[in-house]
Length: 441
Image 1 (cartoon, rainbow, N blue to C red):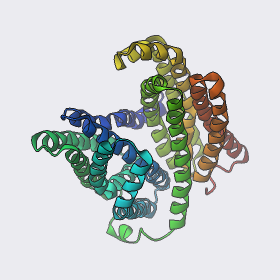
Image 2 (cartoon, helix red, strand yellow):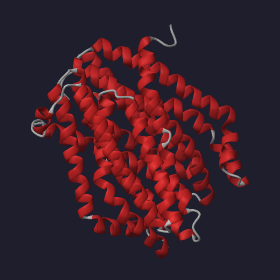
Image 3 (cartoon, helix red, strand yellow):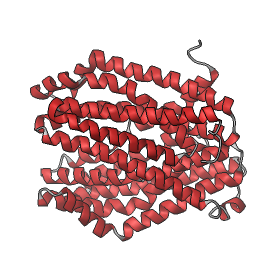
Image 4 (cartoon, rainbow, N blue to C red):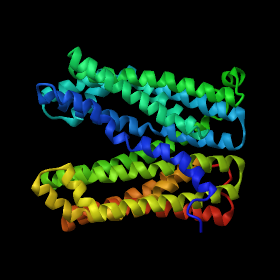
């Protein structure tokens, strides 16, 4: 069997830019943190950390806008449906704008509510409030950027994510240095830098979108009527994926909560090891994004041959990457841990739990790929149901924590990823058996 067929190469052309884009996501918050970390008091750094965490949680839930847009766009792209492409852009953009404006309208109450939940040092929370009051001004732009990214991915414009990411991040860094260091705006300066870069990225994204629209022959006539038709399907899809994402976020948050109950050393070692897991997950998600685009295109074209060709290529290439991550963590994992922390006790503990970093890429890769497959087919309700099954398994496995300690937490995560993959895999197998995959979700 050839290691790189034409389908494999096409897959890498789409996946590689997404991998490079994705692995920088964990680094985005470091820009604000690095600059504010040089101010004269730790409360500023704490305020930015809490504000970034709250913003990240909220916007991660709303990534449903990108996911649903990619699936609908890819299907219209595969069906060569100009009206469908216009609708897959305009309707989610209107929805993103509406949600962004709602966040702005109720931002004061939402910020106070979230800070009351977080609790902690009043001075740190005050700085977090300053950060959020400015940062959330960019909510409409941030959510619109998700839609634009999803649409550009759906039409397989592979350069767009890298272009948007590089421009946005570079502008963020420059503005951070100017507002925080030069003008002395502190935490608000960091927030303004991110907010302005979001709107600048939106303008660039709209320019890239209109370039594609011209190439596809989609004029204003298509766009002005695109807000009509099939809006209920979009809302139902976003609802299902939102519930799925909420369950995912709650399970991941539970790892931190239960880890905190096991002591400060366990929290610290898990934080170090989660960096490895996050890096792996973001990299493998590049293949999931490629699956979204290609499976959606095959769904729109109703081409089983095209779908299976892409699916086999994704399994092979993503499997190789997952195996490579496992091998790296097996052989040089401790060297990576030692580079991340100089604390002797954390290094010693990491050696006890590093085996999970070897196992998890091989377990998790399949649920990431299957997520992409189901997003491309816009089967949100089945994704929601499979996530509910995985969350139940996760909750039951947490009962082992009093006996197994921190190994119980990592076992719970392994069960969670396994059940996600097994549930989606079973549903996919049943559709293959019945020949119902290309029916309307």
